[in-house]
Length: 180
Ligand SMILES: [Zn+2]
Image 1 (cartoon, protein in one colour):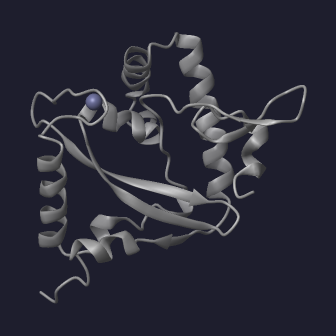
Image 2 (cartoon, rainbow, N blue to C red):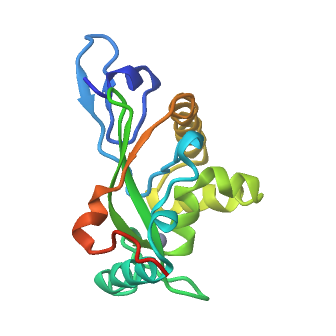
């Protein structure tokens, strides 16, 4: 199975994981708010860099409108701007394909959690961790373990090159980027 190799990491993120004792695989429901770390090997490929500025603006504004300008996870809005556009990716670990599956509107607090690595670099991990506690109803320890797991998967995924598939955009009339 595509995701079986990550089974030993006990990822509480909707990923198939080994059920200790009988070897069966069970699916843990994903937490309401999850961390989504993009492998460092594909940091420089994102929707923003693949389409024109006008196309990106059109995509993100449609995303905001569809969400009613509210966070699609917590329903909140940011104090300075209500929501930001977050790229949703799925990882085919067997094929090495990172596939865009959509865009979602998130408040700045939830968006910071998605990019927990960046939050760390900016010294905002305490704030991000507290938001994870609040939205998921987790203890500090649960957050700590979840973060460790997320970075373990990220390290594994960052050790390889990914074929980035953004064909999702083909149905959004956002490609090809017009020559400007
Ligand atoms: Zn939110």
